[in-house]
Amino acid sequence: MAVKVRIPTPLQRITNGQGEVACEGKTVSDLLTDLERRYPGIRERICDETGKLRRFVNVFVNEEDIRFLQGDQTPLKDGDDVSIIPAIAGGA
Image (tube, rainbow, N blue to C red):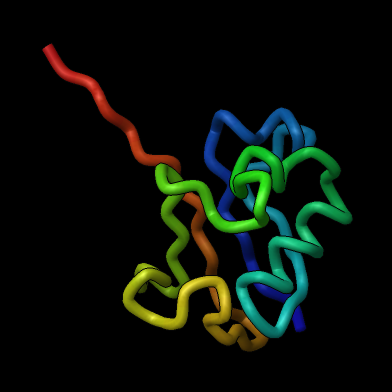
């Protein structure tokens, strides 16, 4: 089951400069495990030491925030589009 994962610019050095990668998984959690297998070191940037998504990282499946779905247990299907988006803060 191929799922397209959009990688934010700060993490693209881990994915060899790729802004989009293909991974597999039945759930977002499975997908993150496959992403780590393919690109070692990326999961620690996305998840905390307990394996939960960091609070400043937003994940969307087909433009739906997984916090309003089933979290990291959100099911995935072939052709889904997953975006990993770090929260950005700042201002003048």
